[in-house]
Image (cartoon, rainbow, N blue to C red; front, side, top):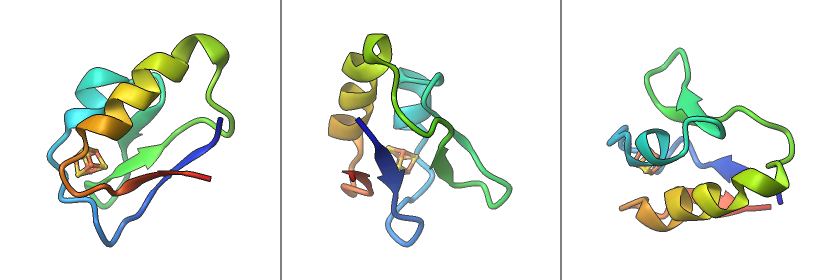
Length: 62
Ligand code: SF4
C-alpha cells in the first residue's frame, strides 16, 4: 500500500497524524506528508483510518 497527501487539499487539521503518526507527519510547510515509501502491513489499518478521517480527501492511495 502506497499513499500520498495532496498538498493542495490538506488543510493541516492533523487528524491523520493523530491517528497514524507512523505513516503521516508534518512537513516543513506545516502540512501533512506520508513519511514511508510503502506502508508496512501492520500499519495499513491505521493508515486507512487516517485516510478515511481526512475531511478534504487529500490522502490518496497510489
Ligand atoms: S487529515 Fe487530511 S487535511 Fe487533515 S492533516 Fe491529514 S491530510 Fe491534511
